[in-house]
Image 1 (spheres, helix red, strand yellow):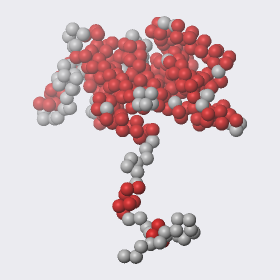
Image 2: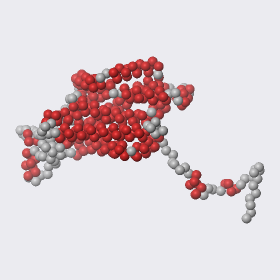
Image 3: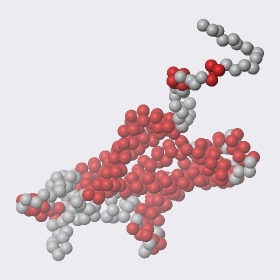
Image 4: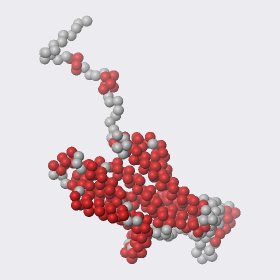
Length: 355
């Protein structure tokens, strides 16, 4: 075997160094762990949390059911089954127990016709209670979602400005936040909802907003006025800790505007806190809507929500306890699932908990 001559201090090239690598050598050089991102890592941790994953699936199923099911259900949420134009009111449809039928439906069934059952019975006005619970779930989830978006937009804007600008602007905004915090929360919600529901009626008359009703619009205004302060304070704290970072100082040195720095640098680095706070705000908004509807300050009749259904059920609590139990269980299930999912998001995406 001929030995290769090596010239450690010469300029001769070893041809063997340029031979293509074998498959084994390539596999050895490949990284053991593929490249990932913060979002992918957080999603993996979230999926490992079985409680949070099941809670999220449950909320999605409830939301999809409340959206899709009314399209195919044979009864409308506001249809009074005992009332037929030109005929006397049939009181046999009122206060039906689950899977019971009215007198007319019984006759049609005896004639061989198939009648879709009233799964949860009917209410005192002869309306199918199951579809009212489903529709009320849709309203409560919709209010919770849109109210959280309103809180997110206002809180994110105000908190970012206060944290980045600092000085007198920060002091002024924080004093406003302190004043709102000092107000009795429940009392202010009830007072604002009561006043706005009356004062908004002539303003929205004849407009597109009339379909929503004064109570629904006043509910969104209540969230916009009172519930953004926690989000603003949280975002401000994050911005204060980030604005002294080197990349922010470098952007300021290059002449970047404050708006550009906030949108391109500061907010993206707060995204985990924003997601977690928004997810935890939704159950709070649903609960607020429910107790306002329970007090008669929520959605306008005959549109149902879970809170208004529970309030109406109080009149026949001893005779029909299931009417109160069903919306109460649905509210508890939604709020509990969203809270557990929010806790899972916090555990998965909060960098302080995963450092």
